[in-house]
Length: 252
Image (cartoon, rainbow, N blue to C red; front, top):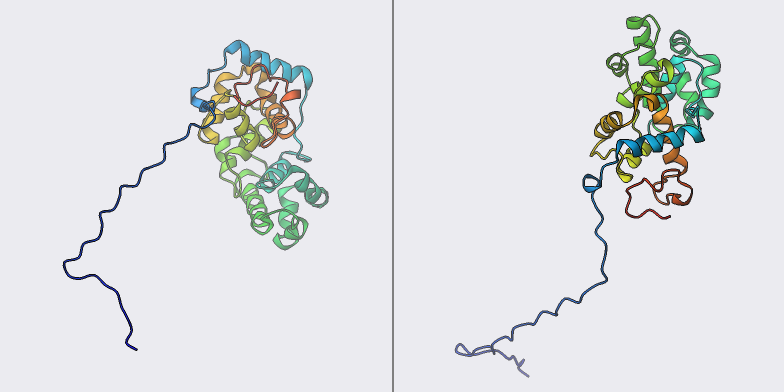
């Protein structure tokens, strides 16, 4: 039997398509607009002073949580802490610093043995290489002493601006502001010093924080971000500066 096919003649026309009606948009639940950090009401000088007075009263002498013995071991610890926790770095460096607490001793230890000590830390291969390289540069160019300027510290392998600021502040008492992920979050979330990058936040904080607080300011902010103003579930109920914070989603 011949296969039956159906088709249209040359003059046949398809029926005109009916226009498709778009469904009317249904109104959704009203949502409060989230102000961008740049749109937040700036903190007044009095509010900033009050905030840091509270931090000082609660913790007059805050300490960094990276364990170290001197300026050199502090430098090494900060370099090792990139993309790692302070607790994890401390577990590795206790044994390392017991045998190598100077650039000369570290260089004598050698990259392979340094790598064995820090292998529990993320990116340990590259970090061990940097520790040996910065130790060699300290000996060759700085007499084995950690330099006291940001530019010179930043010239060391593995050391960036944050590393320099931590070392200058903790080892030499300079009024520097080290901006890590916690400080960056607080600067933007609270509206204290909003910025698109760590440098903008750093400069913003240095501009608004009174000099009398600057020695300990970065430690107060780091500890606040680490234990109170958490990234996912901030503990607004125990926050010292809840009433001053500009974050629209804070709880009271």
